[in-house]
Amino acid sequence: MDEIQLLKSMWKSRTQRQTKLIVPKVTYENMTGSLNNEHWFFKVPYAYRDALDISYDKRIKEKKSYMLWTQGVQLSFKVGDSLISKDNKTSLQVKFANAMGWDPDKNEMYQGSIVFDEYDVDGHKYTKKKQHSCNQMEFLQILITGKEL
Image (spheres, rainbow, N blue to C red):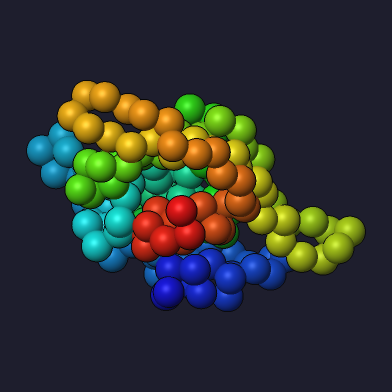
């Protein structure tokens, strides 16, 4: 899982944002944005850039400024976030969440926490199946692979 390994490789107290993203690329054309992550199990749209710590930042090289997408390490899915699988048969809704962050006392990354409900989806009918808890990184892994449910 390249996405998870990329984030873990950045877990240093002073690591700067990287230009390599956990999604293939970010695009925005004709008032529509995409993370181009159609290979993920769950649909994670452009609106979740902040939750994935992806931002459009200004950089300067040889006194010329330019903008590019960068990746940070602090996932921050929030209460109310709701995602549906590509096959439209499973939905996840975050009920409780703490974002990731650097713990200077332990000199390590705090991976946050998430409690979310899993629903079976049949058309417009959502049936609660189970409640899960995990950290932010594990939640990302579920979104990418669909496994661990």
